[in-house]
Length: 116
Figure (cartoon, rainbow, N blue to C red):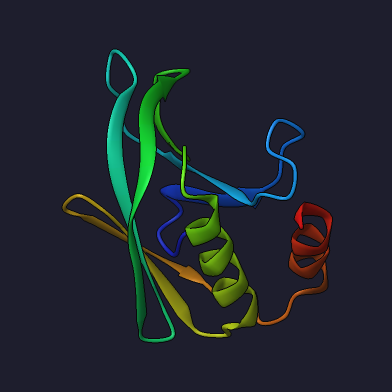
């Protein structure tokens, strides 16, 4: 959950993409009527990642943005988030959200191990 409670950021893996780390962002605002290609950007520990290809769509009336291609870039972001104990920044067009880094969280580390 971001610092405002408006946006959820998740990193995960899927059997459909063995060895890849994926991301999904759920944003408490209306989504598009059909799936649209978009770009994400992350800033972690002073390093910028992106643009990263993603798709935006409406799920239960809310905007959901999911990574769709460059799983290597998402993997880099996930490992940086895992190691960072400060604030990370997610950019989506004009919107910016701030999340806490994982600070070597055991559960986050388990996700990275399971995915790759």
